[in-house]
Image 1 (cartoon, rainbow, N blue to C red):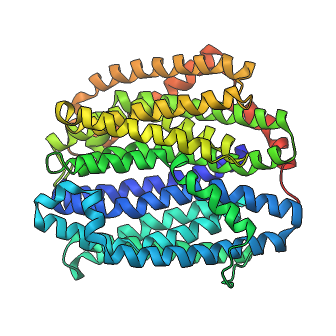
Image 2 (image 1 turned 90 degrees about the vertical axis):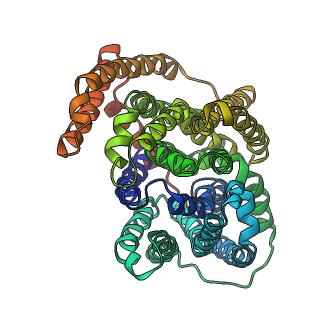
Length: 520
C-alpha cells in the first residue's frame, strides 16, 4: 500500500507543481477580473466530474467490482466487465454532453446565478463552458481506464496522466491566445485538448498491461446494474468536498466581482496537500482493502485502515498548520503579480487559511470513505454527504454577508469536519474502525509537532517580512526558506516526541503490499 501511495503521491505532486505554474500564468494574464471569473466557472463543471469520477464515486464503485471479478474469475472476465462499463459510460455521458451543450445557459443560471446581472459576463461564461464541457466524457473514460490499471496495482500511468492536463493548458495559454478571442477562450479549448491527451495515454497503458478495451454492444447486465447502484450514491458520498466547493462557487457568484477567482487561487494551494496526500492514500488503499475484506481478513483490513490514517495525519497536520501560518506569503509569492495583486492577494490568503483549517478533515474523509466502498456500502456515505452539503449551504448563507469572501472557505471546512465525524462514528459503531495502540500514541504527538512547527514559522515569517515583500528572486528564496525551516522543524519535533519513523513504517508494510497483490 505504501509503495502505491508514494507512486500516486509523487506524480500528483508533479502535476500540482505544474498546476501552480499554470495558475501563476493565469493570474498574471487574467488576474481576478471578469474573464478569469468566467473561465473558472467554466472549468468548475467538468472539473467537478473529473474529481468525482477520477478520485471518488467511479473508483469507489468500479475498483472493488473489477478486482473482485479479476480475483474470482480471471483476466478475461475482468476485461469483459471493464469493456461493458466503458461502452455504457461512453453512451451515457455522450448524451449528457450533448444535452449540456444545448442547455448550457440554464446550467449556468444554476451554477453561477450572480453572473446573470452582467449579461456580457454571463454570455462569456456560457461560451467558455461549452468549450470545456466535452472534457467531461473524455476524463470520465480516462478515469475508468485508471481504475483498471489501479486494480492491477499499476499506479504510474494513471497518476502521470494528470500531468498532461497542466502541460496542455500551459501550451494553450501561451500559443493559442493570439489565435482566439481571449486567453479565456484559449484555456477553455486547452481543457478539452488535455482530455484527449489523457485518454490516449491511458488507452496505450491499458493495452500494454494486457487490458486492451474495445467497444462492445451495450447491455445492462446484472454486474452493470450493481455498478450503477453503487456508483449513484457514491457521486455524493465520495465527492462531498467537491460538491461543497461547487456550492462555494454558487455563493461566490453572488458576492463582489472577483470572488470566484480569489477562492479559486486559495483552493489551488490547498489542493496540493489534498491531492498529494488524500487522493494518493485513498487510491492506493481501496484495491488492497477491497481484497482484504473480500478474503475475510478483518485484522489485515483494520491494520490497513490504521496505517492509512497514520500516514495521512503525518503529512496533513503539518501542511494544514503551515498553510495557516504563512498563507499570505504563499499566495503573494505564487500568484501576486500582473493583474493579481494587492487586496486580491490578501483576500485569497484569508480564504486559504480558512481552507487550511479543514484540510485534515478533507484528507481523512478520503481515507475513511474506502472503508465503506470496499464493503459495497455507498448508501451510508451519501446520507452523510447530504447532511454535509446541506450544512455547507446553510453556513454559506449565514456567512455570506458578514464574512464576504472568507465565508465560503470557512463553511466548506466546517462541513468537512462534520462529514468526517459522522463517517468515523458510523464505522466505529459497526466495529470497522478502531484506533490501535500505535495510532493512539502517535497522532497526538504528530499534532504537537505540527503546532511547534507553526510557532517556528510565525516567528520566521516576521523576521523575513522584508524579503517576502520584495518583487525579485528574494521573495522566492524567503518562501523556500520558510518551507525548508518548517519541514526541518517538524521532523525535529517528531523525532524529539518519539513519533514512529516513516522508514520503519515502510519496512513493515512492504511485505504486506507484496503479498496482497492479486495473482495474474
